[in-house]
Image (cartoon, rainbow, N blue to C red):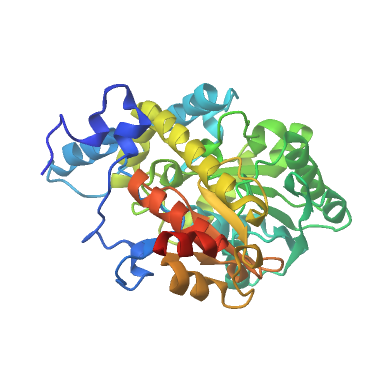
Length: 402
């Protein structure tokens, strides 16, 4: 049992080594990420995009206060939450967001994409790059919407969007994870605006899923789609969530920035048809506490993630397919790790006890790749780096055994 003095969330100045330097046990929490390891001894879960780090104390405190009031009935949407979202974008991203654009949603981004597709009513195929977060393909199939995956280009710096390919299609909608999931690449403002233009020319909408946008590493700038779309702003939607930023995805929520009033009205109408309304009881508590008081914790997290990224990319070299510039995702070439392109996930688990996401889950171009989540406390991170180094260089293992 911890006390405020030895709780990592109360570290003076939120120093990363104090916040994230100790082992963090999720036993008994029902973690989906750790369930993928099937309880195997010694395995480090690095698959799902879910951090093994203690969350912001402000969120825990806010949930505790609300839970102590024994009224858990229907809850109205607090309009002050829109102002809070606008202030977050102004303070963290330096962009002005009209609070009237903000919809506060009591469900996760995947559900928001599904409902937005219904509200947009695309008349042509939905386009998105590949490899890409597998949720887009799943949602399109569930919605009965035709979709087309356009291969990403890659140069010495990593992935870049195939803008010519997007311009050559008449899109019913364009979907984008920005920053990119699985590689952590931060798209440029010019790239995002070009996709907004491509969507608008086809009479569609750019839906930019920016749930990793608040996790952009120092030295990089995240382009908020509705802020960089220029004349195509009304054909653009930004989705974001405190779930990835503050590791609160177990209480699903998100917010949509929808400049077009008619699309906002259609979306709220679609939501009502499913018995969904803005707000939510615990969802609002988490959103408000995170956005209002979570900034110092997030600053410490970003320092920790940047240092972890440098350790891993330094150790893995050319096995990294695209240098990560945001979030906590590492996209790796299985063959460069000495793993078979087919069955790489199982081989990684068997050979060094690391559980990853299979690249095939990210669509065309993902085969032969692995996605690792390096949002780990220092002891687990050090162990994972050591195992990967020995995997790449078996001679290290032999030396250690002499």
